[in-house]
Image (spheres, one colour):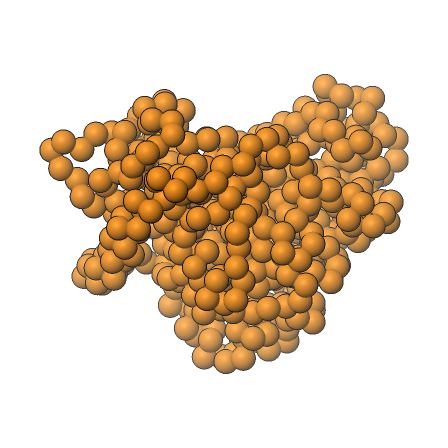
Length: 489
């Protein structure tokens, strides 16, 4: 038996997986984000710990026989968050999250201090990454920075609480901007640019490697006969790739989670930071990946549901299935800024083309299409970098909407595969990594592709109709960008 734990932004999910890779049980404990200022997003690490205990307690109570023989635990986590620890290992301030944009100005400072970082770290400096956050803390909270002895990413902090050891995997470390991604080690130059040294960082391992053993007290709490091994684990997207079997070069997936991701597995480090493409280590050895990100994917629909006072399901039910023509309304999904292709932490969302006759259904469709246009930007930037994507598996909560996936296929031109278990996501991938850490099996023998439930291809009668709305969508960005410069920060 193996357990996978995925620390997301909106919840922590734990799954129990048997030797046949069947998910026997799953439990999610909700999490909440605080926003003390516009563009700021934080969580208290203590809330993650409460969520972990709650989720694991439920699994132990409902499946005591299976939990008793758990051999390994894998961790997946939201990337880029900065957990700052003092001399005693205590948390010094709330974690600054991946979608926090306060460190926009500090990105330029990081680049000035370490000009070689793009080729070493494989990415542009963006406010969501960890490195600019530390420069912000040093400038705005100097007492906290001086007291900082260790910096951990979110899932590494959970591991620290579970095992007493500070260890991180390559895929998650790639999202800090402190990793030499090609060499798979910490970069002294990147750390020095933030006033840090390697001793502040956790030890690095591959995601398939052993990385500590569960605390004996926790093992007793959950009725485990022996202390399970923890795997190195993965950042959330790499864990999703492992769960999908996207471990061979050329395999791809599209994630419709809180944020949106288009992923391509590569055989080597292929940096192309122009246009906001990320180049990270994979969670499995000797593999890397390219990735484009839209910061508000399913988060855009969740925002629209809150704003209208309706459920997401009710909003989606108002749309035709399938959608046969674009909405007359254009939506820019930049609610928390944007990564690919703009790398713009200050840009914000817009509805354009509203009239007296505009309906709620047209606006809902515009939200789905706006996210799809953002993914089309990613497809085109990857193609410009020489990485052509033609098909992808679809995961994340948004993949449950057939209407949304069909819109995505028509806008992006990709053949998209809906999966029988697409919503398992990072937690299932983390469980696979736990198994690999325990058994030492070959990656490809464990990380098998999931069953495809349905493939949606671009409709030749509908897809061409999106050319004009896509052009309007792209033309809006510079106009909104110019307008944003006249508004308060």
